[in-house]
Image 1: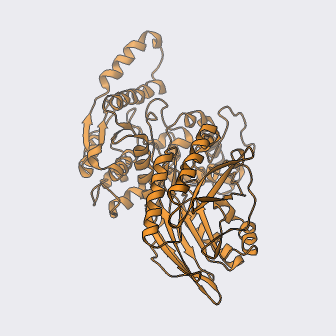
Image 2: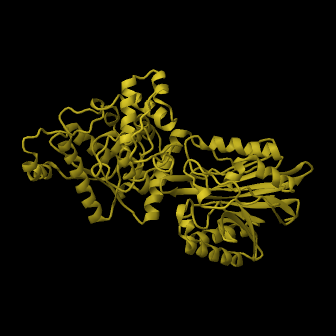
Image 3: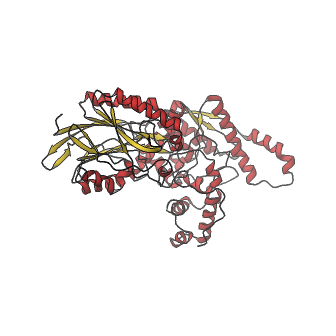
Length: 552
């Protein structure tokens, strides 16, 4: 193409952390696709070569040396054709950088990230040195500037690049999902476009890594705020963008604009995709879970069926003397509706054996929570035995409300390898079940229709560890509890602020106490899908031993 026209190929792809050669091969394929399409530049996301986030893995010299060797080879492999922009670590003068590299004609130009995020799930200031803002780089007569991810959340980098002559901004990202994130991205990038008068190409990674999901949804904005391109949410895609030079500057020609899903669909897809990638990248093809007949395990079963197909999901009912007939019926109804295998392993015998073994030591003592927890731990023991025997990852099913206040048994129902509901409050669990019953998408591998019977959603929640037990015997009603937790955990409100919002002071203090006391449980809990800006793990790091309580 001439200098008056420039074609970008945007590769919204899913890398795997540490799979450096495999990620490089993905990059080569994207470059070949761009070459065939007549691209001038093929763009890949932030840290694509090593996967994101690598956390402290990037501090290991052997790891970064490996990545730099592969990067240099990639430059040679892609010398004859369009330039290739790809994220990878770079070490220079004894300092490690989060960098993005332009490979062209066998040579490399390095862009070094300036602003290192140090909030929410990010901890980049302890990993990387601060880069400097350069003058951009020239390809086929067009000067481009590349603010790397966080750099574009601040006005200075784009402004300095524009002042240095950059005519188009290309922003590679590793931006993980949380509810409402896309609107924030669009708003901030629109600000950069308004400030510079330059078109902006926002390329985001896609795919799951541990608790995080990189949701793609890449886009291109023209001066004036026009959305010229919107790539799909939650899936790999390659798109070509044609930039043309006009009297008033460069503009992107309009391409496909794929609708972005609403929060309910986005949350559900993120739970499905994070589980799918966590299993696939960990080497698991099958899962199992305890199916109680309750709403949480039913939703996890649906998520698992949609992620890897019903034939790869084993549901296990583990009834005790306290298990109701309707729970058995409801569990069977869920498994049948989804098309999953359902096994039954009664726990009454093993629980009685445990009681007999402990009897001499417990003699003269009244049954209490100890005996209830033995039931839960027996279920965990049996489920882990099945997991070991059949090579199936055990999924846990506790929602964010339960995880927050410790309404779960460590080494019991908390046993397992992944928890899709870890950041989903109970009130949202109910509504998500209703959403799944009403909707089916082509990315779901489970069947359409009502897969969670209405009775499962509508009945009062119960752990069924004693006669006539209900969750509300131990906890406030979930609408009340969840709003208090949102204020205490997600919004960092004081006890006084929660009380001022209309909640009972004694109940608020009880909930606060449970949140702090349960930190040791969360420290040992399975990882799970991040849906909010205040998920338990990297978003919220509290001491396990903590004697402070809010005096307000």
